[in-house]
Image (cartoon, rainbow, N blue to C red; front, side, top):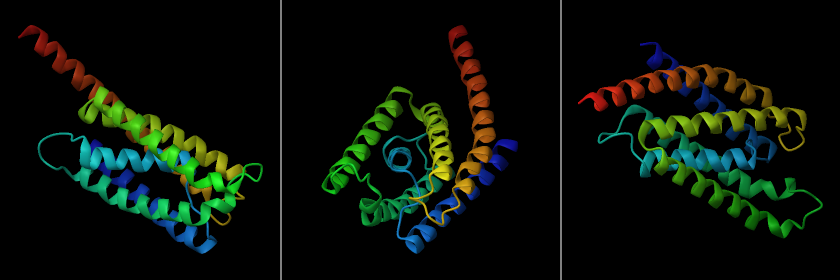
Amino acid sequence: MLFKALSVFSDVCWTLVYIDMINQGFKDETYGMPLFALAFNISWEFIFSFLIRYGEEINLQEGVNAAWFLLDAVIVYTCFRYGKKHFPDAINKRWFLPWSLIVLAASFITVYFAGLEFSGLWGASHSAFAQNLMMSVLFMECSYSATMFMGNPCILRSSNGWVQSPHDRILHTYWKQLDIGIRNRDRHL
């Protein structure tokens, strides 16, 4: 019961953050998520919604992940539409698109093969935990260098990590205990 309540609370918080990023991104003509966080995030949501399944049947979290993928696709659009002006001045702006595509491809490959290595819910939860840590750090950094994010309340996004982390910690602990119990049971059969 606690796990389900924390999951729903976390899902609602992340959805609100995505909607805020999209609205603020269009308003300020920028994108609301650091490129590396965005690339890993959209890759994770696509992979664990459509390519690597938790089980035979579609569950609620996969539906939420698919909805987040669509919201992230809008943020990717804002990244490609407005991101070039935020690319470092020391680098020729023509490198913005190739660099962004390389980051997206590398993120996808990393998340996909991590998902294959650590299959199912175990792999999804571990990779999500690492990704949420990265996102929290990047969002905290963006709150210090808010030039790219203009009116975006980056503290809201970094604080979402405070909500997500306890949920992930409980999920990780619960599944670790469950997995150990299953392995011990299987050894005795």
